[in-house]
Length: 323
Image 1 (tube, helix red, strand yellow):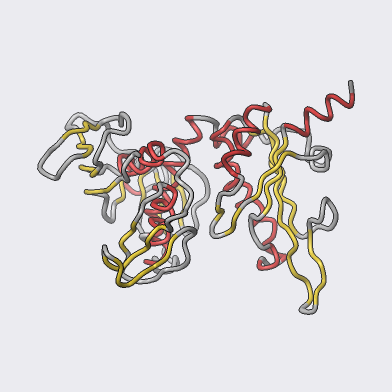
Image 2 (tube, helix red, strand yellow):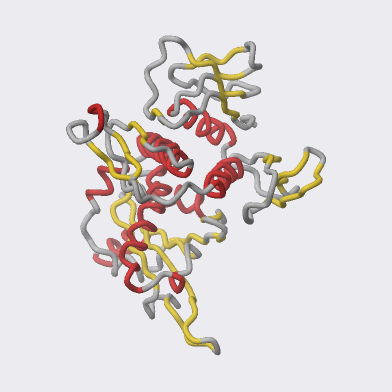
């Protein structure tokens, strides 16, 4: 019975490799870095079911080759791994299928069921703080959509982003509750000593979203960094921009990717989202033809946007075709 229980625990643990290079992170910042990495991975995994615990193993020896080795140039990264324990085998299997072969930033990920090594090393308790913050399933997807909009607004340098509840930490911003916020409006407020916004960060965020959706082409006047499965061409048939490789993998669910773009635009209060076909219902919007083309038009009685980006907004947006 003990052996069967241990085997069941291992099957609920997915080991993900290829996440990052911990050797680039100063030792003094390692704990904060591991926390951010855990948040990023939790946000992806909880879409497939309830996550109990994630352990990040970076820079430690043992455990199937994890850690650092010494080469001619000194210490170098061998592997940075994370072990994710789910509440059910079904959730673990779904996450494994979704993560294996994906790119995290620009790194290809590998995912596999644990062989028993990490099930024994993971803290046996559940991470209730992250479970409450992220949720799982549809709630987790909605949380991630909201978080993407928040980060995009921050990358643009929004002085304030109205948000009815904190969604986590945001670099260069403080979350203020109504009693402490100007005019009594809760949200994220940019610190006075924050650096100027980086146009590159905005461009990269848009490129990543388009890549996830499988867009064949993303217009971009200049090269802003490598994007998996894309080449930047200054003189392509559609102009300067990123062109998807002919052999690139198909988006896992183009309709879900399109809905993600739609939800982001809706969260920011877009008046119109160009979309050639109906890919699902979006609260507060009608899909129809109109003066701006075929797509989703915001209804007059639509609920107020979850985010009000006070330095600007998303009056128009574009969603990729749903496939």
